[in-house]
Amino acid sequence: MSPLWLVTNAASGSNSEAAVDDLVASLSASGCAPARIIRFPDEDLPARELLEAEGVATLAIFTGDGTINTAASALEGWQGALLVLPGGTQNLLSKSLHGDVPAEEVTGKLATARRVRRNALRTSQGVALVELLAGPGAMWADVRESVRDLDLSTMAETFTTALRETREGAGVRVADPAGTGKPEGYRAVRMAPIDADCMEADGFDFADWGEFAAQGFAMLVKRDFRQGPHDELGRFPSVLLESESAIALMIDGERRDGGKREKVTCEEFTLDFLATSSPET
Figure 1 (cartoon, rainbow, N blue to C red):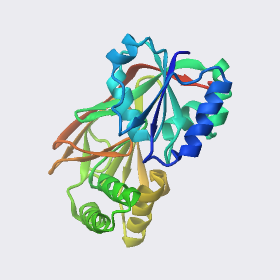
Figure 2: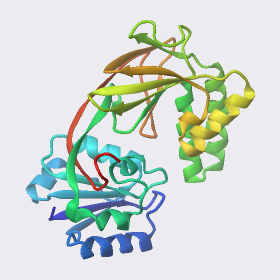
Figure 3: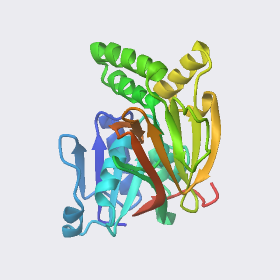
Figure 4: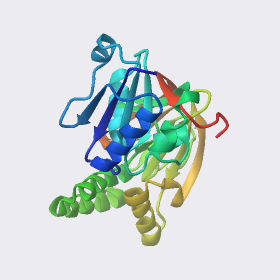
């Protein structure tokens, strides 16, 4: 597991200096003292070639899901392992690998950690390791970003845009497999990779302002899409999405812009992650 490098991000939810100091101490106590600490975004994320040249065996990442996605996507094919630690606000990937536990509890179990592979969703705009939201509802990711930055003017602008697009923007429909979901489409389709190279998909719509407000809040604050009204569309190895307009995407919480047709495929992501929870968790 050593040598180990650590990536932190001061803009992420749990990345205070004290939290980083405590994490370094717990890694050291586990026999995995970081040989180098990279403070993103002041320093670049390490490239695969650099990690290979330096003989790094483990890259620990104490950031939010978006930074983790960026780092992992750049390292696909690397022979080392990624240790995802809960350093953001949602920590969805960390929870799936370790359970809903603090970073110090994860590092305390490193002696028995196992290397695992994960399925991911591939799109024209990147890879989703945890979840993908497609459609006008994905515009709420822009609001989340402005809230996180405490940018009041941008917050008002992005909120107005998200409100308008979610209600009035062109819906997104599942064109393939044919006959999936409503023919007119949804305000958002959420997809998440599961076992056996297969994703689950849900469609979200709003019957009235109450449902709209509740779902917008879930998207903005909790990223808990299942709180809102939705149709369970099924499980598929791939889906083809279509819309009359460019499809807004939210990939692991980060906004992207797709085309009018987006194919989403679930397949193995060729990078090892360290997991400390039991396999059945």
